[in-house]
Length: 257
Length: 350
Image 1 (cartoon, rainbow over the protein chains, first blue to last red):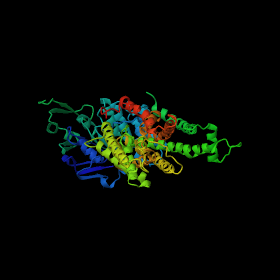
Image 2: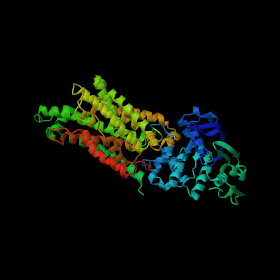
Image 3: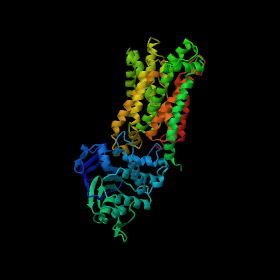
Image 4: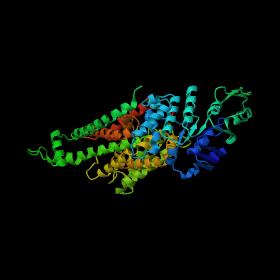
């Protein structure tokens, strides 16, 4: 499912956090949203997945206005991995991942063996197949993050929204997570912090600064010394990575601490 | 680490069947308990005769007085306690999912006080038959008050929820006690004791069906809602992105729970803590998944209240202890236990 955002603005108690942002995810590409803390990445994503109401602009899914699509219909096509995954109640990992099947099941319909297969293969995808019967609350932060990704995969989405999916993960699982996501071969829009990872995995980047798109384009076009200096106020050196299509970025510490 | 879901699923049927058996046995056993001593054989002969028309072969084994007590007083009362218990426990489980907080319960949140204010108010104004409706309006008002107080200025936390419940509880019960004091002991007004501590003494064949039917309808309704309830527990963002129209279902559930609370309170006064104790214990037996939680909670609530009412009948000779005292004696320590032990925490991790 393609996502098109046109002139989207979002206000948070009178303050405009996102200002007339337009972006697009289509042709099953992996698109990243970069930018410093507080630049409005999460707010933008949350208004796309309908937790926040935009104050202006439109959001289109496959060219259709978001307001004309029910939550349930959208959830069959779009999955979200957000940063909010606290739980006060004790569910097992399998039960959590099975929640991903919710939009596909009617109220009185019970889960079929197909749903269980989907859940199991989603757990395999994130390398957590042995954890199915563990209690979710007993998992570490990184494990929880992977379970949330498994739940999103179980939704069988055509569009995946990720809000800093590599938080809490060690190097191996950061790479693994992004590889899994890439391998799904669907449209992905992810807020990321790590510019190197973004350059390695993403097809297209949007850089957000103070709620506005500062620059956009293919990783090697966008991630330049000048842009990084302007957006993050950090000096750096950039070279082509010897072992991947990504970039290596080496930063200088900020002058004023 | 234990293999929890397998344990839970495997255990679920066993738990359900055991509870069903325990419930039937409890009903049969507690029928023999009461102020007047009636032998078990008389009791069961009366029940057999009345329910199945089986008359014992020999001469009548029981007196008319015994028959009146068992059939006209005790049996409807035990029957009512089965459904009141189920309803109270169900209210707790649903509220906990709806506000995503394991400490939510109609009594602790002051919803019951709202219901009792509505009921006493409508009795005071002379709408004798509108008591249940008054109680419903009262519980809706209390629900709105608590939710808006607790979510004022940001996210609803356990502390804010419990404190708001305390405030609403204190205010509403003060007003309803004031009304009762104004009315004195006139006809149609029930005592403060009845409303604040609960009692099933009013159970008669002609007044138990309405609450029973409402409890059955609500139970059937919520048994079908397990998937949405589960998603609610996963949090607002998750629910929305899983396609659940969260605010819609939350409103529906709150209205149904308020309705149920109103009817339960107008039937038997405020019986506290059942909705806290039962879902909590049941979660430790079958896990948090509502598919298993709801049926188990309903049965466990029934058993608990059947026994609580039996104890209320027999604890003091020739007198009734209000049933709310029994449930509070069991519930208050558990409430403290939940606060301390399980880290649902006063604000720390919430």
